[in-house]
Length: 167
View 1: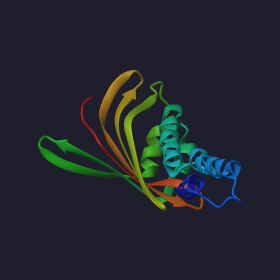
View 2: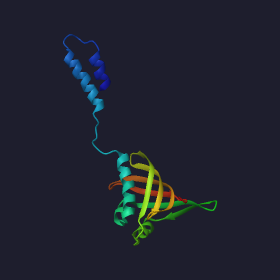
View 3: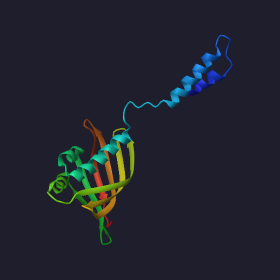
View 4: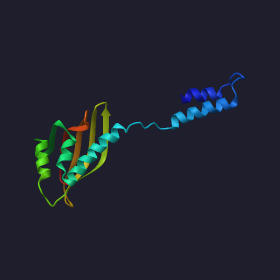
């Protein structure tokens, strides 16, 4: 639209087309590229909201809100080293929620940075670095890799794998 309007506004036209009409065409073209269309939030914004809600739920120990962020078929893994040997440990959402729900004076505070999100239709990948604090003390650090799928309930975490090392 913009290119057509600019081209039309600048090219010589028959005498029936006046200068005001050309200016209107040019203005319409400029407005068509400078006026943002925000009918719905972007997928990146929606996925980021799920990621942030997970860590907020961990901080407040809200197991119900955390559970709602996960797909019913969710899987959880931790990849780390024991000595020089790589180890992959499988966990479950239920185990995670049981640990989160145990009474404690120490807040779980996972601080993330460098969040990168890639998506294609109903699939998204979120990758971020983190430092996990128990209270005010750094406990471990690493990377979280989350696979999210769009379900009838919105974006949900299907797969979460983290690495762990000393902070």
